[in-house]
Every structure is written in C-alpha cells, then in structure tokens.
Image 1 (cartoon, rainbow, N blue to C red):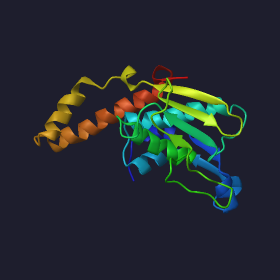
Image 2: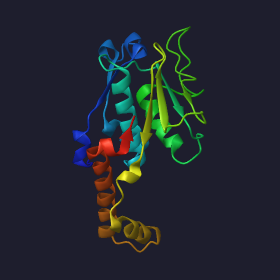
Image 3: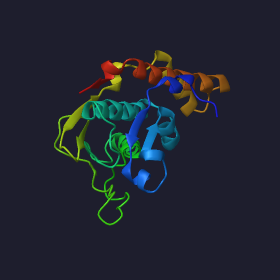
Length: 196
C-alpha cells in the first residue's frame, strides 16, 4: 500500500481503553492511533480529516498532560449539527479515536464500558469542538482553521478539469499531489490552524 510518506512523520495518539483490556484485545488496553489509521477509516486524507486528528491530538494532550487518555471516558461536543458542513466527518474521525458516539455505539457490559451519549451536536459552545473528561469534568475547547493554509493556486484549475472529464492522467496525479501538499502543510503549521 503506497501513500504519502509524510503520514509516517505525524505524531501518534496513544490511549488506554479499559474495554480493550477487559476483552484481551491489546495488552494493558493501550492503543496507538496513527494518522494513517484514521485515513484508512475515512478512506482519504484531506484538511477535514487532518483537522479532526489534530483537534483530538491537541485536546487530549491538554486534558491528560501527565497521564494516558482514557478511551471511552471523553465527551465530545460540536457547535454544528451532524449534517452541517463537515461536522459529521470530523465526528466520525474523533469517534474512531476516542470511542465517543451519539446513540449508535457500544452500549456496554452491564454498567461498564458504555460508549453511547458521549458525542453531541448542535451544542451551545463557542468553539469548533469541545472535549470533556467524564472522570474529572475538565474540558478544553478547540478551534480549527484550515483556511490559514490555503490551497495552491493550481489546485482549483486541476479539480475543474477532472470534474469536466478533460483531465489527463498526469493532471489527475498532479491534483492528488497538490492536495496532499496542503494537508502536509497543515500538519507542519499546527499552531496556525489549531487554537485552544
């Protein structure tokens, strides 16, 4: 499987998942999520998927400065509705990493490991997304601004050629390369696109 090599340079997210430990899935329940992992789940790499990953990475570092984040014990809230803009896509990426879901996730074993009702949309918050620890109540609000890293000028022209069915194979390859150059730039300029 070939993919842009910068994926391998992106910091991974490690969480401890009590359910995983309970079921003997991963030793001590420790799970590493890489950007490549979420790209596989989403099926593509784009500024939205990158932003969801970065929001989660930065929020978990802030909420768990000296300990491993607990998967399944993090509430996630969005100001947008689930069908507004790209909120649903961002929610899917964050759900994969944190385990948080609305009403469709794992309902638990007796009173343990319930992952439902940990994600909510259309909430009265000022940020793009808010993360809250369910054990301490500590929370962090995260804003993501991908427009701080604009696309290259030729990206739009190449996309139009593809949409019109007149792009050459070279045009299509170049479009993908240009697209991923912007994603790489977003990761290289985290402080420009993410604010807490």
